[in-house]
Image 1 (spheres, one colour):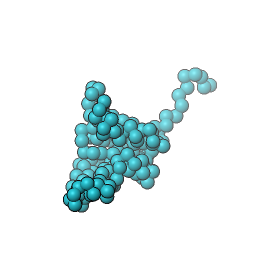
Image 2 (spheres, rainbow, N blue to C red):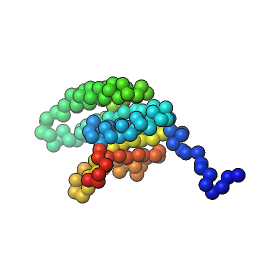
Image 3 (tube, rainbow, N blue to C red):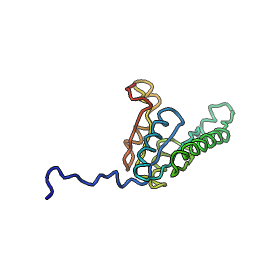
Image 4 (cartoon, one colour):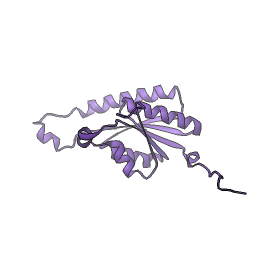
Length: 160
């Protein structure tokens, strides 16, 4: 007989693929740790995603003819992502990485769809006030726009 204390099947059991955006910082590392802990319990895949922001073409108008070193930036990001994936695979084998270019929050949502992610796990920097107003919040945009659940974490357990 099912009473009011009956537990429903937890939706977390349906999670088979976690997407973890990374900017290679402390908050992202905390998100990776959390994602690995979840993935190992769920036997889920993990995709580490780095979105390389490249300035729009119209920025070159203001740069006085200077060229942005886009190939070098992308090459360095690829190298760092490959190293992170290799390091992470030593702890959990179902890890892969993907590098994309564009506005990070849009890239995260597109990658979640493309890879069939069931959960996005991402770090937050905890910016407040003017820095948040000027820089925006990638995590906030993802949380507000994502069609799938988003789990956020910070690099430290104390509020900043």
